[in-house]
Image 1 (cartoon, rainbow, N blue to C red):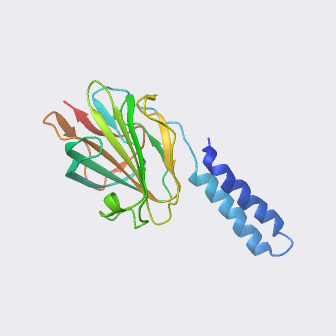
Image 2: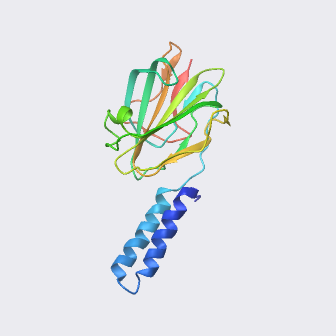
Image 3: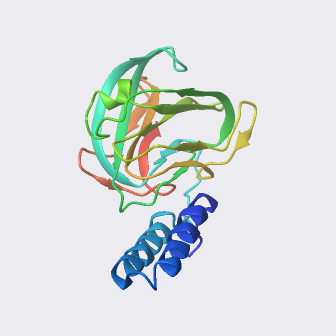
Length: 209
């Protein structure tokens, strides 16, 4: 299993602490070994097989759909939009992937709170990074939103980058929330329901008719 590079400092650090504490306390030593093992599990980066389709909007994250709402998005969509929010627990893969193929036209980081990611106010008040992607068919905004445990959002793209559908573009360290926001048009069909389990890079969230 591939592991995201951001995970190695945690894995190595916990493992070294386990080795150093082995002569002092076997209990604490094993505790850090377990934490190293969990870090390897958390930062796993499995391959995904994206059904590339210019009319499809693919899930940017693993998790559970916790909201499907109408909203007004002023940062990138600049108008009425449809929002699909995904809650990522610490057990989910935390790699984030591009919902569509296109050009990165917008990246903005915003400081904020660290409220529980499943709460609706997290969408507006928490620390977040926003990434906008556009192609000839549509434009989308992906919000990476920190949660109670998350203290670091990673975004590896910048405006002007070309990105393929399903490509990795970042991750959030520990529990968090990811939102896909798209223009509200008559040709947009939502393909998921509340509490559906979704897989980043594979699950079809919405489709352009």
